[in-house]
Image (cartoon, rainbow, N blue to C red; front, side, top):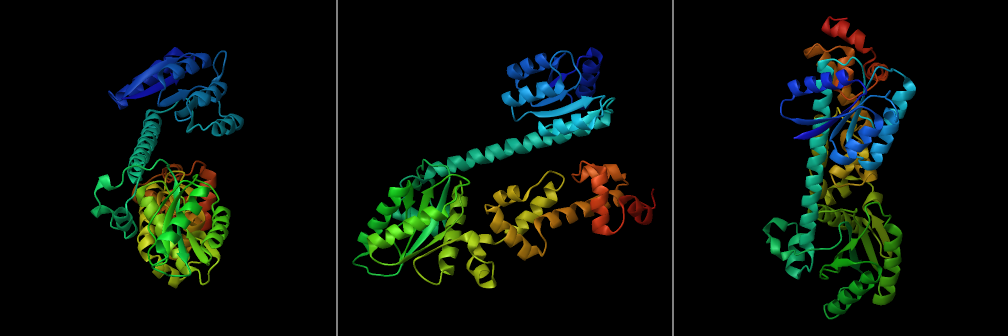
Length: 410
């Protein structure tokens, strides 16, 4: 059951809204009331509601001030303003406070129902995402004390064939892979070189190292999610060449946080090191140009990435989807994902999403008879005027003209 707070200084408003919600969503909400801003803050501290309906004008601490305080207590709660005041300055400040919706009174039943369905969907998505993060963290804990056998299964992409107890816990949450390739290949020196590489890397960071095989050694290095890793790897390269007394080259993958992510990072590092034509150099996957040759090297890594993205966008186009979020979804950096997406689709991410939204809007107006404003909100735009400008830019006609010409409606 979800918790919902109604903050309004009018008792009849609170009771009417509660009755409307309970009829539309029976047995789904526990509802609390607050008659002014101070009471709303206290209720949030006590009950931590999932959703808050807040009036702006109330005695004492008013709505926007209360929301600012509530955000210090709970940044995750979904806040919607229900008010009789249609002032741009209020709406602008509400947006800065992370308010989900700004609804003018008197709100219709359908408005409230649609709003709650939207907020519940967002809450469930966020809960699912947190669950996925917990699962990823649990999987990552399985990676401590990797044996040579375990590394072989991991690097050959046969993780499914490896029993879970083979990987027993790694303490860091985020890591990136590097693949170090030596210039020389000497079976008698292999163990000494392997140990030298491990000791050099461990001076910089905590890490997990594979055995040295075919002149290459793979390493997962502890990292922060947004850390710039190239400079530290360049320092490592100089140190390695000094200690090994031979030249090396290093490929770098992206920072990841799960077993599947680490496998991807390893393949990225492998792609990067394969692209390097000379030693004493470092290459990050983001700096590898997307050419047919590289695509062949990296085919198994990217595989169906674009198909995954297109499916994701068709399911989530009505939300505030960003390139950064989608790149994270497919375990790529925004820069590399942007290049890959443009090459595979022939469009930028923004253009693709915009065209998708406009096509969906046309479909809703044509097949479901939605008004321009209804179609605007359904496809994720909050401002009908802005939606109309985008629609005309894409189709060379306004939404109203489209409805008249294609749908036979005004």
